[in-house]
Image 1 (tube, rainbow, N blue to C red):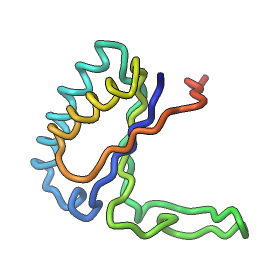
Image 2 (cartoon, one colour; image 1 turned 135 degrees about the vertical axis):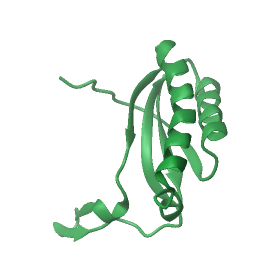
Image 3 (cartoon, rainbow, N blue to C red; image 1 turned 120 degrees about the vertical axis):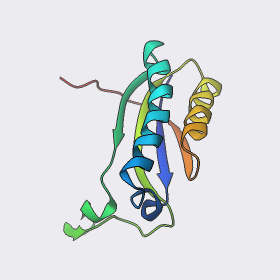
Image 4 (tube, one colour; image 1 turned 180 degrees about the vertical axis):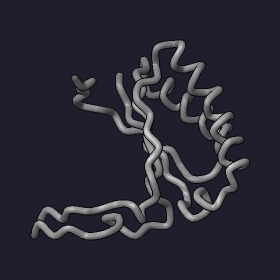
Length: 118
């Protein structure tokens, strides 16, 4: 079963980290990434730029807006695609991510369609 793991956190806090703090978090996350990648479970993982770099196309009136669609306390900062046996295995991956990078939340959402690209 494939899941998207959506990574939410306080963008202001995360993007205020020093390079050293960011590198330390990424090094801890990389340990988790390598483990799951070797097992063939980790698919694409994406780290997004801040919402200040976002552009939103509002479908109802074709308006193009600077910034994110919604104002929220925590922002979507990235996501993973994983291919696991079941939800429990997906939660195990998310718990390892949490241990490496506390704060925020990880939302697991089953994927209906997955195109690997061309």
